[in-house]
Amino acid sequence: MTSGGRTGSKRTKDGAGNPSRVQAGVVGMGLMGTSIVACLLGAGHRVAAIEKGAARRRTAPQRLLHLLQDASARGLIAGAPSALMDRFTVSADFHALHGAAIVVESTVEDAATKRQVLAAIEAAVSRRTLIGSNTSAIPVTELQRGAAHPERILGLHWAEPAHITRFMEVICGRGTSPSSAQRAMRLARQWGKEPSLVRKDIRGFISNRMMYALLREAFYLVERGFATVADVDRSLRNDLGYWITFAGPFRFMDLTGIPAYAAVMKDLLPELSCATQVPRLMRKVVKSGARGVSNAKGFYRYTPAQARQWEERFVKFSHEIRELAGRYPEGSRTGEFRRRGARVSA
Ligand SMILES: NC(=O)c1ccc[n+]([C@@H]2O[C@H](COP(=O)([O-])OP(=O)(O)OC[C@H]3O[C@@H](n4cnc5c(N)ncnc54)[C@H](O)[C@@H]3O)[C@@H](O)[C@H]2O)c1
Image (cartoon, rainbow, N blue to C red; front, side, top):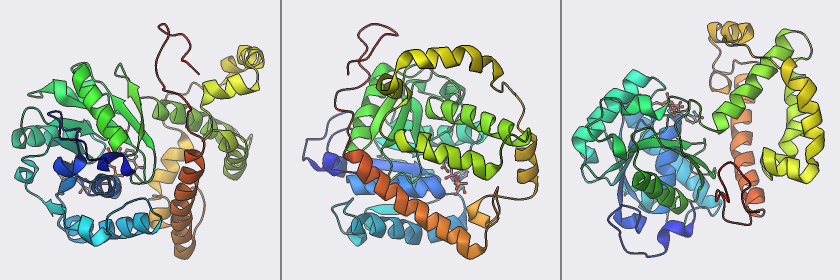
């Protein structure tokens, strides 16, 4: 959500011109949909949101205003929050998406629901409208099944809070056209993101595959009694947490000496967990009704006040880490392979 979208460029046919002239749509005004709308409004789009829940529709403007006020106070958006709110509508009627050049689906993580929602979007928009699903891990090809125009459907994977984070993965399903992927990459940059392109569909994409590999090992260490939940968290925060915003794993190996990693891999990889079931501890915690800080029940105990404080601290930290990371840009164009599977330019 930077000034990238307010440079006054003319509208282009692909809907990646000046965002103020490009209508956007978002389906699902839950946690993520709300911050996605905040990002799109901040970038200059008009946004029509679709939400099936009456209570969520009623509370959407207030939740959104809160995010915009926060972003404005931190200098992340140029326009006044109240003026941006004038460019937002919410309803249960998919016809409101008519005229949108880009629609983001952000409903529940269920393939059948998402396919139904995508069909409803396709019925409401023009055949050139780009449609991005904010799925966390469903292969995009599964979502394209039965679509009228699969070539314009792709994964658009955001990170919460979407109006602050720079993360975005643009994922090509089997039917996605290269031009749709390029349109999405251009839009993502206008939204202030540093997008990665996932060229071939794979469940979990990039960051979630890495994250879940890490979660599997974290559960393994706790369930086998090697460490407590708090010990695992502390180690990760103080090791990986100190460099991962600065360098990804490959840059980090460049920075710290490559051969040692090869030596460790040889002995360690065969010992890492390869479990394929949801961990016992995870099943138990879910069964207890724990949802994390949102209901003050999780892997840790919280009073309601402590849970609220963790939520607020997380938002504050997201702003601060964004500022810090912004001072250390990648320093070069990324993702340009010299040869297939070989090094990228530094
Ligand atoms: N929460 C995260 O940090 C995060 C991160 C990345 C991706 N995602 C993905 O984003 C999506 C949304 O996640 P969330 O955390 O915002 O969920 P959420 O439950 O907070 O919100 C989902 C919203 O979609 C609405 N909805 C459901 N079916 C609908 C329909 N047919 N039409 C209109 N609205 C409908 C629900 O009423 C709800 O308001 C999921 O696919 C999730 O995996 C979430």
